[in-house]
Image (cartoon, rainbow, N blue to C red; front, side, top):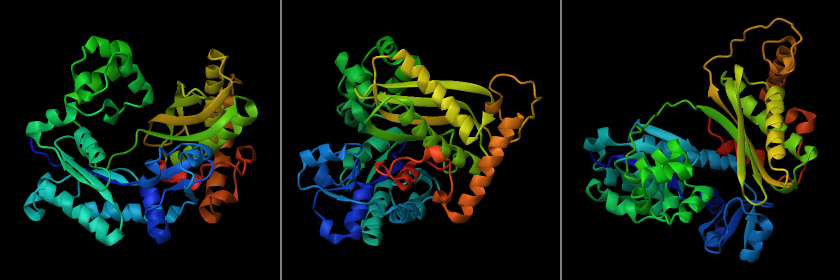
Length: 413
């Protein structure tokens, strides 16, 4: 097989847009955000500033750091324009976020040249038309193309020859692999695995014991560049989720409930807009020591009502806190809904007075909750998101991550 998969990723996208909009910021360390760093320029990253870092810590690392507010409409406009440039070369484009996409150019080389030439042209056009830097990786598989684009940063191009792909891959740090975050990286380090090559030669039973059977098998396959995934230009999401980094807050009801309701409101609104209720609700709690714990529940009937989702998420979070009584401080809450269905037909239920009636979508109370959501959706469609909502979901004005930024990061269904 030839290397025809491209992964294009706009460099430090949000910060680069701010430097584009305000030329006086070019070449200077800047961060988008305030209480929390939403994104950092490469000049700021050189001092150790990273996305998700508290603003106070970022200023300590880089005293000359300039914080700027986000221009969210410009992010969307420029992100769309960059993806459109890629689409001018091939219809096989799979957008995975506002600022990155995969593309398969196997069918258009007779028109535009080799994959490397196409990638170079894409970079030239994005720079000339949008004045933004973009890195591109070209490889035989999606996994390797994404790694190549990371190696290419900032503002570069890396083409991985199929004949030397393992030589290229195996000397790289293991954290460049898909699905290897800080927790997994720490676990691998405990058994002396720091490079992808070391992971590739680790016995399967050892990885399965460390990471679990499914995760261990998948990481081992990717370490040998076994990745059969194809470009899906019209894929439908299998889940919808949102998270909120809340700093260091006490694990108490007055913190947890408004945050979960706020997250559930965002998720449920998106599910209703696409008529895609889901059966499995998952929550994630991150404590102050960065340990993350997840819990989930699968329902008999799919849901997309805001209050039903909120109450289920609250129960799951409470169960986590009961199991970790020594953890008194939380730093992040997240909710996701999976096993999405393609329609929202409801099966009505008899009024039997069973426990949890309000959380069953087909009961009288469940239907009433969905009717209230429908009315809220209509008002928001006409007058904007902030025109109406659930009062207890209103978060303090000091909340550090604007909803506009979150919505850009959340994948469309």
